[in-house]
Image 1 (cartoon, helix red, strand yellow):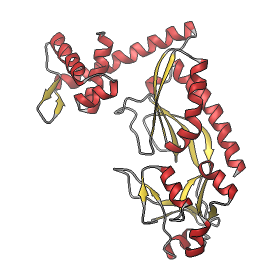
Image 2: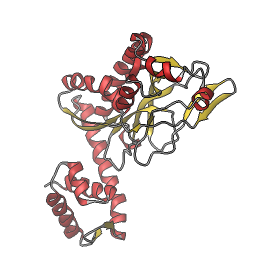
Image 3: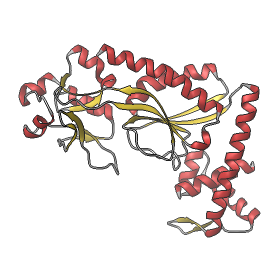
Image 4: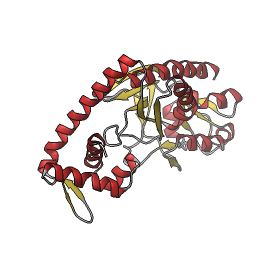
Amino acid sequence: MSYVETIKTFLRVYDLGSMSAAARDQRISAAVASARINTLETQLGVRLFSRTTRSLHPTEQGRVFYDGALRILEAIDAAEAAVTDMTRSPRGTLFVAAPLGVGKRFLAPEVPRFKKLYPLVEIRLRLSDRKIDLTSEGLDVALFQDQPRDSNLMMRQFAEVERVVCAAPDYLAVMGRPKNGDDLIADGHHCLNLRYPGAPEFQWILNTPDGPRKYAVTGPFESDDGDVLTGWALDGYGVILKPRHEVAQHLASGALVELCQDTPPSPVTLGFLYAHRKHQDPKLRLFMDHMSDRIGTAIKKAQSDA
């Protein structure tokens, strides 16, 4: 058991507040995680966590050690990056997150191609439409598709993603065709929302002649999976607001019809979020270079084909 692996386990236990969660995250057993923490406490001669049957909390000594442990790993990362730059053979594991739609359609197909170019780099991909936290979930980088927000993370933007409000012809035959956001509200349209546990109250932001305006849309169904919403819309159950590239083929075939063209939604930014301490990691730079070039090109083509 290496000291570095022990430090990594300590940091994950601290961040996640759970021995079992840290063990799952590191793909080890809870017994191994517990043994590593016990060994570390024995070496240091202090208790790093106070434990009960129901909870685990860092002690004062644990909080102090956490800051030092982070600096240790940052120094190791920097040293590995320097050596990798010298050998020009990037190696190691990248933990990557992405939204379901863009992740399945564009990112996932490129992972094997990236692996073929850099065989010593392992990719662990997590796809979800819920909001993620890089630090607490042990991620190196996340692909985001959203309005840019203030963040203590570094951001690398590489594409603008057009969005569209749309619905199936069968739905419009019953409910009518809204020309703008006011029609959505006044005519009681069934808007299908992406929502996940802990998500804020959902609003659609559309561009009006007076500037962007928030519309508090409602509907009978919600899901934390964007593809489920698209399926419901195709089946005639309501209106969706989606990135154009995710529904391009349905718009081209006529299975979905673009709506609210008097007040279209603003485009959102596509890019990568990653921690400041990762900016010198060569495998991360190579991954972002590869993916931004290929995904950006693919999305532009998908948008133009719609």
